[in-house]
Image (cartoon, rainbow, N blue to C red):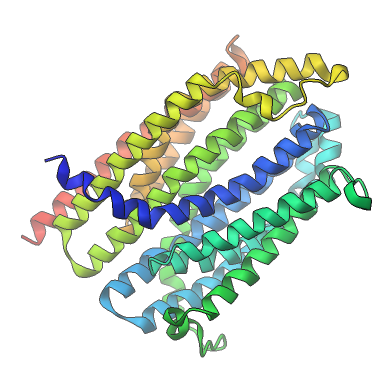
Length: 457
């Protein structure tokens, strides 16, 4: 019985591995920024955390919205309908570019909120100019996501990975030159990190489109684009799928962002520790996100073929693989919880030795909680991918809102600010929200697939 699921592991990994590397690449941009900026001091690290907390909220809307493109393209590919796949790309790219510009504008107007959020004054002063550049980088990032989701829908997941690897090389190089002022370049501190992020994201878009132009499989989809001709029905279809998906991602990212802000109320050191634990757990989360995309693609294909028995079996194989990998990650977090935070701060910095020790000790405790919620986090995002493949987005949106904001956030707020648990209490609330989300989303998928099989018997 188990073999019917495990035999899919190889193909699931083949399909999702480039996505994992690509998503890890996005996270690695932040990882590189955090490690390099962390050498400047805990205030600078906390500032990057605060600035990115605003960007992550906007980014979640853009990336979540773009996921509507993948199931539409996957279903069209399963049906052999090239025209519909091309229309999904064109309309999705227009909508995502417009959304990126809108989110950039909103972030500029939202900057003054930092002054009324009870954050450390030193941290806010560093974060304000950093946010300007990173906010603008949302425009090319969300354009890239539209192209990526299209490529994923055609099961061509390796090209976005190549673009992300290149972007990371550029980002790390510019960080080295501009943060510290190496090789004759000006020392720009965290502004240098922001420039590296912006330039790398522009290059991602250009390079991915170039890769499409070199592959004949994409010719029918990317040639003869007429942006003046559009379908209101296609716009509405993408919006109807994309908006709930954007809210799903927003609800999850926003609760983690709230954890950053709550940590900032506790002080710059708890905020820096939160950033370290969040960055590490984000990297393992991207592995589950890759499997989520595999579930979305394969479920979308089987939906187009109307083979619902296979759809359910394949989805369950993705869920099982996700659980196995996340158990391994949980063990790694638990075993190496004291060593991992040392990568982010200079242990030989005598002037900041007390601050650094407090940050590393707090981050170690948070990683113990992160180890536990690896499984819940992985399951909920994998099941969400399968539900998007079914183009079921409205009920899952309601589920994620209840799990994170009716259950998770109140627990984080109370335990973090009104008990001695402090930072650990904030993360216990995250664990509660993720666990409820995983259980309810799985119940939803189980119900839908049983109904589809029964109605098509």
